[in-house]
Image 1: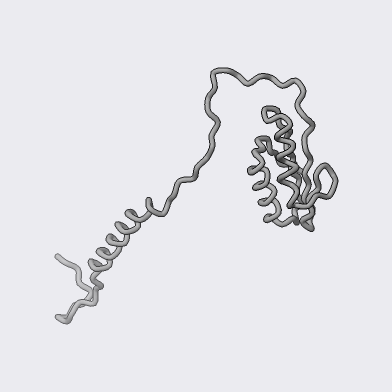
Image 2: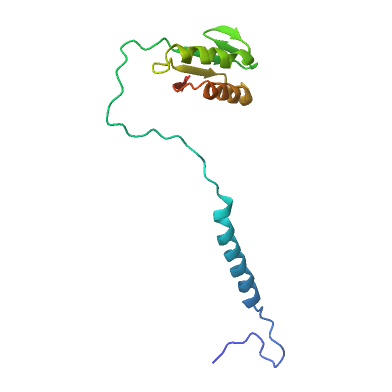
Length: 137
């Protein structure tokens, strides 16, 4: 016995959901096909396994303290440094001993502009600096 909301002989007021389900299935298929296209690979230089351990350096160089204050001024070992000269200074430090580089310790103010930090990191990457750390307050 079927249930009916209309006891009279008039038309039924139920909604036909079949077209809605068809549209939803088509949209699901479209999203499933386009989702892998939207993702793109990111190249990452991962360290490779080495059977020979690196030689131990008994005398690591003095770390470089790089501070960025709230106004965006960069300080290289507590001396004000223009952002344009930063990459040359980093390259000089790397060229002294490429296998025993100093650690670049970056300290930023909470109010500092992120764009300045991004430029500092780009300069460090372009200068081939390998040891970069952030100072935790």
